[in-house]
Image 1 (cartoon, rainbow, N blue to C red):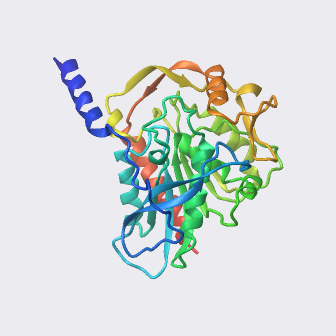
Image 2: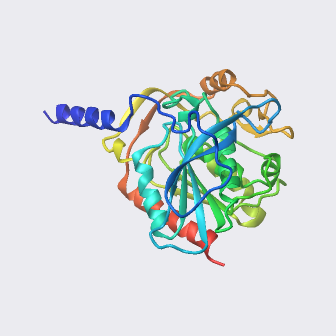
Length: 335
């Protein structure tokens, strides 16, 4: 009886959390080139639709972000740009919106999917984490058009955590067609399968938060990044949370679910470790360029085993919310 009750609770939650139709609020709408901070709104803006940081022959795309404002009005604000993971925008992201706006910060939550007609990406290959990153930097440039917005942070989950990690490295930032920089960045249970030469210059303060039991994006790769670069300037922080799995802050996963076909990205050999070339392309350490969804899916299958368990963890959620709030207050608002 209990199992049947749990099953129907899951069905109801699934039906209410997933829309049946992809709706793009910016379809046939001209993108904004400036942003107003007097009222909350859905904002249409232009990004580069690119799988990597090589922009040759890449087209622009109009996507949307939702602007959230603090209740206490000010003359000057700091802000955080939020970028979702492969599952798209989800209700649990709202608690981060509320946390940050209650802390006096503007939040700009990007929707990477609706303009691209993607509902969710169980292959993790339709777009790349760098696609999300390009959108985030486009949003950064948009927010910087308003003189009332000062420091801007970057927050991303899972595949959306790739951008916050890469924003830590100066040479990656230099490849992006903007002079603007994030003040700091947070990646929550991110994909960390990138590496760079040891002397690589770092600049943006970075916090990586992982679950010790995460078998979708195992934290070992994040530990490797931290171990390699924490001596550079002390601007990289790493927090591992015990008994936490992927999606630990999503109450929809309260009972825990095992997905037999999802990839466990546990393989970390040269074929499966990525870097960014001087031309901005994604390349594995054996020299293969990975610049299409097809190539990405091929290497994803090669670099993983099947079977992943995801589960909500209230303690891990509380720890994460507290850490995220304190990190952004320290790096954005404290002089």
